[in-house]
Amino acid sequence: MTKNSYSFDQKVVLVTGGGSGMGRAIVQAFLDNNATVAVIGRRLDALQDTLAPYPKERTLAISKDVSEPQAAAQIVAEVLEHFGRLDVVVSNAGIYEGGDILELDSKNWERLRSINLDAFFYLAQASYPALQEARGTLIATSSVSGLNGDWKQAAYNATKHAVNGFVRSLALDWGEKGVRVNAIAPAFTVTDMTKSMAGTPEQLAPFNNRIPLGRPGTPEDIAPAVLFLASPDAAYITGVVLPIDGGTSASTGQPHIV
Image (cartoon, rainbow, N blue to C red):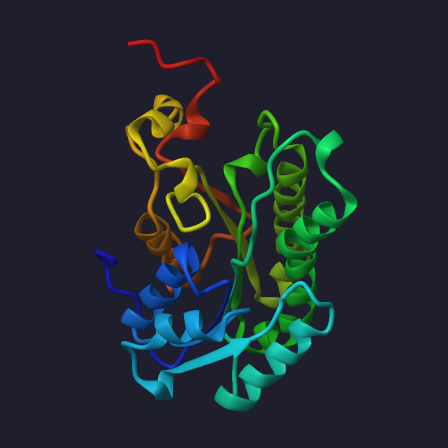
């Protein structure tokens, strides 16, 4: 999955939302580079599928709903009990909810916010002591939708803008303690969550029109950037929201006229 090799021997990594899509690719990329990985999600069978090809002594699956306030502390405690340390935390769990906010009921807003934003807040709080001890790194999966606006995505974009603000401010607060905090910002990426929007060339055409590289992203495009941000090669990088978007965010928003 990755062209370069990174040295994650003896490093313990925690990834939320690792049962499919970008999360699964991130988990497997770390494992391919000799990390020890705890993967978190609601469906234990999906987590086990992610970890199946790898040695059991380097893996741990924890079935938890990361949006629950008490879950993060429980997860971090279990990882520390099992592996004795924690070096990298990837807050990847997320959902998408589009549409006009006038049509978004409070229950769906609560779910969107609790998974995309609150879960990051709780995980950052819970993991900080271990990350400080390890002089580790926290990485969030954000979105290019957290950089600007999108039609019919006000609620979703708000959660991603908030994550970006968290990341930049935590980088300031935690830098002197040796903890780096960054985010990745993918554009449209084909995963289980988005495949209904990308099933035909006609559906993909509006996205491809805005992507200079001419295709949507894949999970395999995303994972190497996460490894880089977690690696010693990025030791002087913190507070960054890194677009992984095929050039999408380089545009002013004008259509691609051929």
